[in-house]
Image 1 (cartoon, helix red, strand yellow):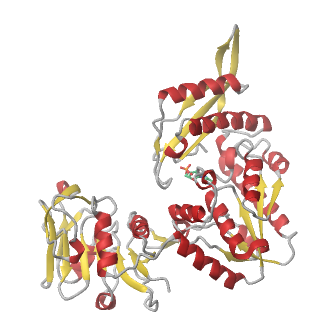
Image 2 (image 1 turned 90 degrees about the horizontal axis):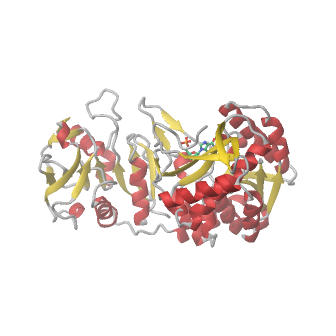
Image 3 (image 1 turned 135 degrees about the horizontal axis):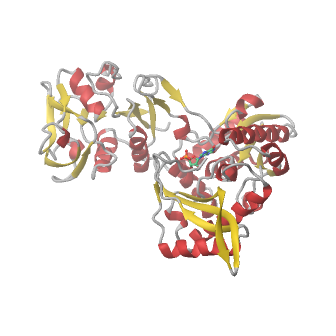
Length: 505
Ligand code: XMP
């Protein structure tokens, strides 16, 4: 049985980051809503309580009874989690003066305490909650302080229960503290590796699917590709992959990616449906309408192809963990965002198989590597489902797609040549709906403008524009203007997200 840590989610934005850190240590963990602890799961070895946007004394604060947990399992409360344990045991929590918020340093530490092993005095911590614990009940012992916050960490005596005020993800020795909890306190064996995941998943896929036929939609992206290779290992030719070209892919992408898939031994059908999409998109300028047409068109083409396969029972998807985690909104309702191939499962009436649904993105990449997939597939930048359709502002024509593909190709190839591709999260060109005056030779021109966008990010929720070298930009803009007919101006987008988004539409 795969041992695990459970993270109770009290709604903080850093809950997923805690999960990632625990997995990076090599310990399997799952994130569940604060009030849904799986009491009947014997594989749980410890519990972490996350932070929260609320204060413990807030009327709307998330509350749950921890007594059963505290008497059976090691418990670590972080930020709100720590305040919640202290407050509900009779301690007090108060708003901190603003200077106690943010960066701080641990000034005294009880290094005898198992949670505090190998954490040096002076190490930097990040206090992300606006409240602090100002007194702890009898039986609680302070085990770390900063200059301004006396109770930065505590243990409940006679119990395997701890609380820490600082956030672990951004604190200097946060990973060490998590390791102390997971390994020394919970006895975690750190047995979660890409190899062990592949072995157990292949086994369970074989049990789950038997001799059934499975169909999977490939997009060229990392998630669906890794899901396909994993399923291929489990059930071989009973898996049929379908890769639809809606005509809005990057230059030569359809052929190249299809070729990659065939080299990986996948049973894949490539469907060139670009004519259908061009005709349905003709004259359409509204961004959401473009998305809807492409989404629906994709489902129709996929459905038609899938039904040519006799006796197909399952639809497989590359859904990953961040798509599935039930996150808590500030109003207390649970939202489930599950947007992989919107609408496909409902339409097809097939059973759903999602072998990556418990993995974070970096784990999907490790699994892909372990499965022997080529690096260029694994490190591919994210690319929106509707493709270049949302990067051509205004209506779409085959000529505009050709211009954008050529410009985009020069930009992306340039990033690879200059060793910059892996340093940015995502990059692409955008065709603007303006023409401007230029001069070429003795002629005045009146041609199109291209915007280039490259961003750094860790999860696409926020992003900064990539500070690419001027020499690189000079070369790329020159090449685009000289080689792509119809373009006489190149701009670079220097907006961050928020308030801008990564895509322009
Ligand atoms: P934004 O533009 O919202 O994008 O900052 C965040 C991430 O999502 C991708 N994106 C999409 N992906 N269908 C997709 O599959 C879409 O309609 C879509 N719109 C944006 C975007 O490329 C970025 O990685």
